[in-house]
Image 1 (cartoon, helix red, strand yellow):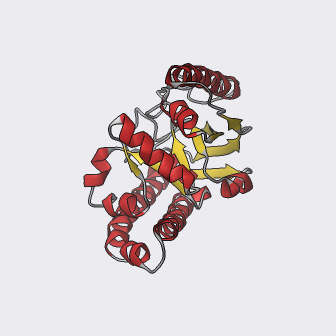
Image 2: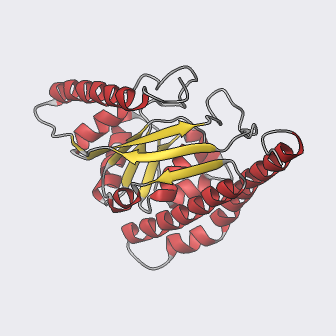
Length: 263
């Protein structure tokens, strides 16, 4: 049966959309049941947060397995040991698809991220992001202090410097300086992660319910760690952040431009 057309595609579409529904309902139910238990189980603050992060990691890994079984995605992560062993790093990644953060957290048991304020009002995800110690995107000084706290307790901070999903026709979107600024001002190492996609789908131009006709193949690779090595005053930090952002953007363009499908 050709699963890219006709009845075969209908089955894949139903399976894919069902995964989203299960994920949403599961997020709501876990926010009301297991996550509060893990959050308030005896232990210090760091222990409780890490416990919840591990639970979210397991749930996201289950989501990736469901999407794989539904024929929506195939993930190849030869760098899984580097991701599992990372600690207290700013993890930067390009952002080709809707499910990038799900894929990354499914591979990293101690990962956090900066989330839009709107998610803190989302009944399906509010409990998850709060219990896992994720960071709300707010005023710069408060955001930096939150990032410092998260990184110091050993949590990896996932940031997409593009800010939004890559627009079709681009290798990557222009990088913003936020990730570099955080790394410089918190003295955190940077771990570049490349998400190389074949059969692009769930892109910026695609609605969430448009299940691709071929499985999205995502190859996850890590680059060499970068020591931000801050020095000097705030003005010097700003210059260092500009240079680091430029170097990161050049690195991603070089690594992705040769065969990246979104081009």
